[in-house]
Length: 71
Image (cartoon, rainbow, N blue to C red; front, top):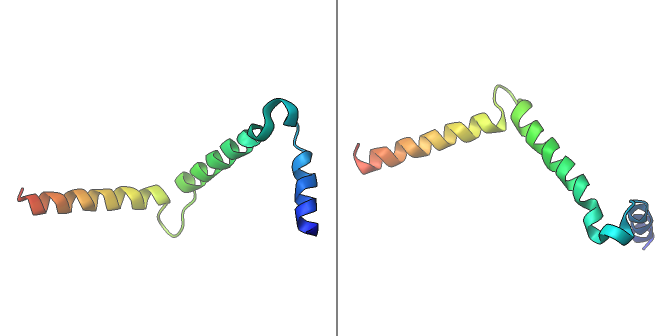
């Protein structure tokens, strides 16, 4: 119960409640999405980023589809 009250108090500190309602939180989600995208593109774990793995898997699926098709 105490955590819920603290959370409500924290959410009330975000301006624009009367004008925008719940949508006043959208800028935070846009920034969070942009930060996640930047992280996935630029931060490497070992020698690969998320997109390196994605592109490799996509080309492997295309190659497998061509082999099954008989090209």
